[in-house]
Length: 513
Image 1 (cartoon, rainbow, N blue to C red):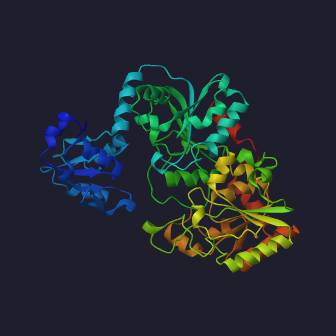
Image 2 (image 1 turned 120 degrees about the vertical axis):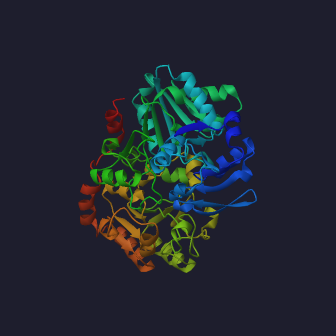
Image 3 (image 1 turned 45 degrees about the horizontal axis):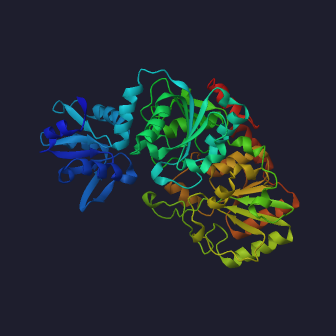
């Protein structure tokens, strides 16, 4: 069995056959149909991801998306397999493992979209050149899911700032891949710091493409937080590190092995090392137990942050980081970013509850800062009246405008309310009260699920199942009580290997940079 690129020559060999596409990607399919007249030849799509399976409406046709076992049912006298995936080599290996006894299959084809076509050309151009002292940084999700501010944030940014502070740019070119490089002119005067657009990977401007692929093909180290597909065809001597967002409680929705997609990932402890090996399909030697880079910020919070964000001065601050979700439907409909109450908040469902909570906070000289998830639309949150001065909503846009990261604020929080987010696990390092809204814990566990069995045993804080619970927690914080401190400190010793603000140093030391 061999793997062949679909081009003008090979298309002649399959133009009269049915096409079974491997992996669902509407973007790839549209590029494919624009390049070759295959729309009516496509018979079905095979995809392991359960969320992709079912009927798929595409260009006036209804296509079935089915599981991988259907590969064995294909009539290869009349049909061919066409891979439409960034990871076409990886997909080809899977297909070979499934069809190794099918002697009638001699060729599997793959379609290179414009980005893949460009990259393979540049990879060939630079294959004999030595790698250079270039370090690439990227944060945020895939380009198609771009959210303003997330492309210069999180663990990647924390590590970058550490390298600047310690003058790594004297030896290395520190290159950021962002959406709009023009927004980072403040860094132009710093030696060996550059910002390029990740959109230049498919730019029609050759100069932009050249600058993008030069660093991508010749960088020694590539750090990313979340999206890693842009570095899918790296050389074996390039080091890719998945810094990820955090170690939390939620499990991964769909399993895809990442063992060949990057060399290392950072975690915070041995127990999370084992968890991430399981849910990301990684080997033990790929795990860097260093702590997360952005945990450094917890120990060095911003000064006068309330002035920059127009937050009222108070004796104490409680931060609330809800990840909005409605887990009452089946897994494929699970939505973690939509409000499901009058106010858009869990536990505090109504305006009347919100008013009572505000009055309680005011009586205790506490301000509750509700920081929305980056994907949450502030417009979908229930109206908070101007006279509710002790409840403040912060969204991603406000923090982006002020160039502030959430961990740079949490160091000022006297307590935290969370749900199943990794932010609560980070916050444990400060040894302050934590509470968890658990009004949908049973439904969430049945649908998405958790990385721990008996999830309540692993929550390092007070459980909030109803409005009365949240009021009791506010009163405890106001009085200085810490009712779950003993449990939190016990879990801290298990869930975190290190309890300091030196994660960035451990990361660069582990990689010998």
